Length: 86
Image (cartoon, rainbow, N blue to C red; front, side, top):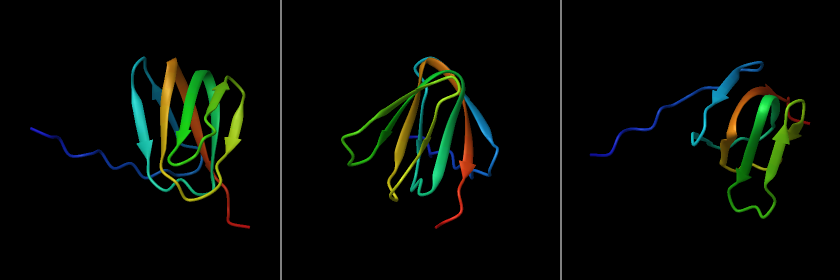
């Protein structure tokens, strides 16, 4: 029996804890800046060769309108910052 996905609406300043072996998929993450507040996080963008691994204090600004997957290495706390379109 398949379970329905959980829908999460990001607001700027929102943070999320990722425990070991947990993964979160964000749809169409255009303009999202991700800040690793603690631990380490792996970020993979759909149809993109470049992955990102962030340590505490590191951030990445996502370009394009792709889905992304976040995973703790082994755990992490990340904050989301929505950047206004240029």
